[in-house]
Amino acid sequence: MHHGYNEHPVNPLPTVVWILVAPIVVTEIIFALAGTGIFGPAAIGWRYQMLGQLGFDPLLFKRMIALQDWSFRPFVTLISYAFVHLSLTHAAFVVVFTLALGKFVGEVFASWALAAVFLGASILGALVYALMPFTQVTLVGGYPGAYGLIGAFTWLLWMRLGPGDPNRIRAFSMIGMLAGLQLVFAVLFGASPDWIAQFAGFGFGFLLSFLVAPGGWRHLLRKLRKR
Image (tube, rainbow, N blue to C red; front, side, top):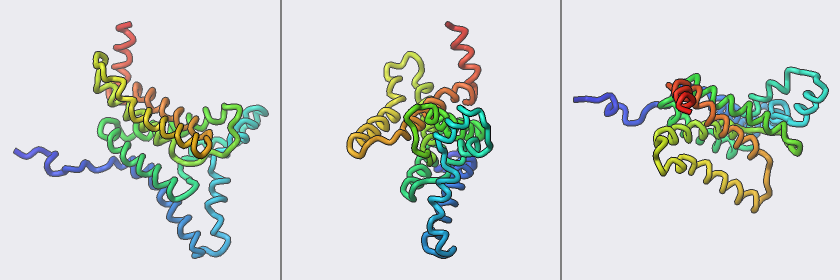
């Protein structure tokens, strides 16, 4: 008897995951080509120009809110910052994270739900980052979105282990390990406030899963009724 699983030992990645990483890959290819001088000498600085244009500037956002002078660009950068990176290495880590976690989460979540987690975590991560009084550095990169997917992945593990399981806390081991690594890096190399956006993204991804996972909303209502 042939099960569908045997024919595809590796489940294909959901299309939405490729759509999310495509802009990151394309911009890195453009920056790499620009660095060779193929587009002329002015193109060598393209990465920094793009980071300036598409990065999320918390000071600009704070000023906009303080003056209630709403302009289009700061709102666009709430999403666009997630697709530009400081270096090829920075981008590569985000792409690997997003592909790996997108595969796990995408096996359960619908495509729109997966996109909502990544993009929502990027937006909320940037907003929380901007609301902190001490953040000044422009935020760039897809880590807050990827951390949103870690949040959804953690939620799946947490739900799978179930309420009575003494090991339920182990669902949080991945984010705990990442928090530990961040701490070590902060001690060794100095802390960058980016972690605020990343952990806000994680929290958003975890909480949003209650609403967007298959049966998630019904499950939440059941739990609330039991109280």
